[in-house]
Length: 365
Length: 78
Figure 1 (cartoon, one colour):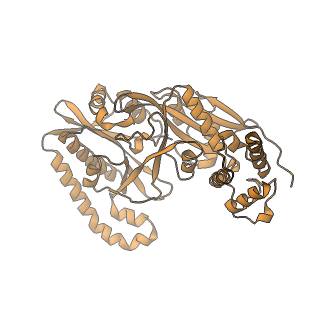
Figure 2 (spheres, each protein chain N blue to C red):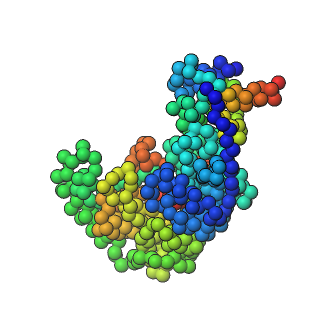
């Protein structure tokens, strides 16, 4: 059998918007109607507008046609002692006809080299099941824990009615459970309103969030630096996602905040999922109480807006797990569709430090 | 060396040994996807006691190119 004619794969490294149109076209072909990666505005927001500087983008072309892409988004990162320049790997896309040829490794290798040249000291990724082996073998990343998935029902009846058909017989049980869930939510909400905390919706993150970050960053350990600049970009400026942020005040300071959103998931047709995207709090009694109250309020709002269940991703151990439990979110054990490992390369990879890592720290692309 | 490479390819992609030849590639072996490509690399590294660089991995487009890379390695280590 004759060999296929040799092709030249042209690898281009960039940091602007010159390839975004082609990237969206490739993403549309691979992912269909995904709301984020098929939006040019989304990529401009992610790649150009971030507080850490422009993303290092690597795209592969054959005869001028994009066949693969990967990017590293610089982000302000903290390891508890100080800030380090880190980069999050996102948007690995390889044209299906190009799989099995090592293009993925080539894209990531080139992006990592570009990230190093740009001064990024630590690279991290949250890979899916097909790419994780690549990162932790030939690409020399180290496994650094994983995100646990916590799940809780909000509207059991609707969940059981719209979920897998095998669950339909449980609908009557759901009709009994729903009032109990609402009652528990009211109890949790009542406990928090003992006059000590004031919950307020946030449209814009001001200097009070920088103050909170300064107070908590040492205890938080390794995490994205949650300054107001980062938070405004991350949760205030994303063109394709609508987040709801609620903060808790104790006396004159913010002691915690929770960010949530509602979405549909392709793998769960007909089900609307609420997500606790991000959470940060003081490690004080007020902070702990605030997170519980904030999560309760987020769940209430998500339920009222039609979410059937709520999920949260959190790297354990974390003191925030208690608040999730109080609100009926429990960890799904073992490896499942929501299992997400974390892998790192560079300065202090596998530091052994405490870690604060939520879904919001990686689910950007 | 080729026999060893063919045997590994056959085992990783679960195809009959007799169907492997120098032009075998992702275009001719249905199971040759990115995950299996990685399994192939790891199996070759273990069999031949080498650790491939990324540019070598991406150059492994056919059994012929795999053989060439390994021969070059063997020649370099001679």
